[in-house]
Image (cartoon, rainbow, N blue to C red; front, top):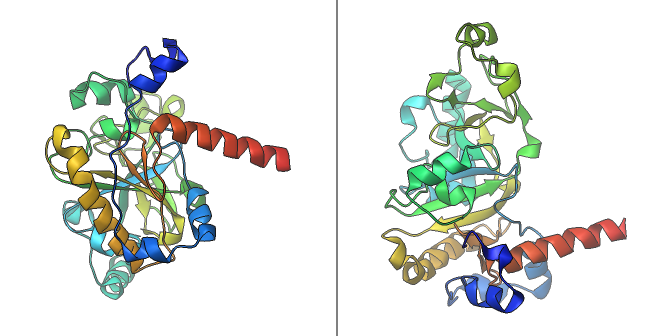
Length: 289
């Protein structure tokens, strides 16, 4: 979106707003959805650039099991590997070792301008589009799972161990957060001023124990593989893939977006329309109270 977008008149805005790629849906799930179900999915639609949305970047086949198993915590040594497909084996491993974290980020807490510069992008865009594992230099397809972090408790930088359904920053500017508060202060850095709304490096982000269940999922953002010039033509294939996976887990039907905030499914809206839709929906909720 151009930086001076808000200074354009209304007719200019209509010409400037980038339209989402047209997605031709030929999925069985689409044919089976009632208007009531569509409405429930639309109720989950958000502005993906609003603060305090948890998001986990998935690739390398991990997406195949996420809608069934949820986000399963991994040992640090396995950070770059796919999730364990067998949830029973994963649960046994967690009970045995008491180790396993989900790596994720939270919108509104990163240094967005630094991430933008590192991404090589000059135009204004969403925080997720700039983040370390999604930025254009990452050539593979990314599936970004959005989830509700309000169901989890945040711990401070000095937390040595994380109990179930708790999270904390994983790393701060490359420094090991296993250091306690006093150790941080010895470096001239005051963690009290940093926590909790710190400028997190999205390469490290946050860690959560031990699992994010599918019931906490709020949406999925897709960045297709290949150069950005090919994203629109590749997007339809990726959306079809995700719809097929969701069709096998119909208790997890989620809105699908691109990294620019455009809604791709179950309806198609550009980012400006999404923001307007969300604002009006929230206003209506307030009026009904």
